[in-house]
Image 1: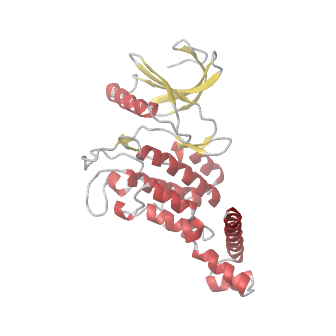
Image 2: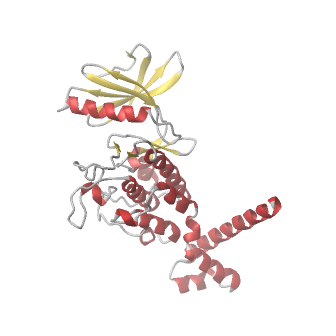
Image 3: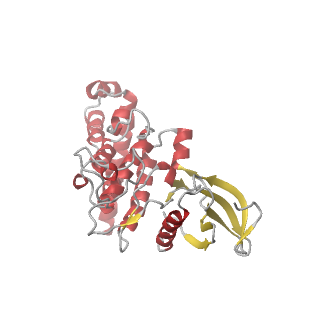
Length: 328
């Protein structure tokens, strides 16, 4: 085990332990010459049943990450392979995971759900367009860091794989039940594990967006996949439609790539019929929040939220139209 204050490879000084899992410990370290802080992941042979296999998996993971250059993905800067220890030096990402945030605060604002969804879809889109494509396969709140300045980074590529078009079946169940797509553990049609592809990541992301927006963990009882507005009626029906499409059991019924998903997220409020209806009742027919609430079967507070979102959208459309007229 590395010691606090020790020097790794003659240049990385260990400052503190910042986390540990079943097989590894992660430290904060500094390269004093470069005055740069890094995260160091140490995996030791001691206590690991098949260190050779684990080490090989880590080599695959690090080789994969070394090729990646994307603002929502971490960078690997060094790999130190010792006889009984494998060390990975990577970006130190300050902040909480989304899981930490959910535990502290519960469901997150809808605007953040969409913002993080777009960022994660962008990262996945980059991975899926690598040659060969990389399928992440284990999107979950504990694998996403929230940076102090805002924005997210996707971490932990332990279950990622390079996609092989000619290979039509995975041999191992990988991923986290609750967030995992049916093809990762076998589906309701009696099919066993079958090949994961970009649409598997889209399913995983949809389940994560549902958890972030509702605070309902799909890994905990009652283990139900419900439309998000059944948990929280104040959420957008447009966002609900997007998440439902992401999480279809049949991959062919999902978004077929992250470009489609990103477009939908960018225009989620255009899918939201309830905003338009509320705006018409309130603006055209001069009805009160209470009257509209009675008609739609929702709370007056919900009516007010939908009205202001519809008005904001209309203002954005007017500004866009005015700008296009000026430029013409």
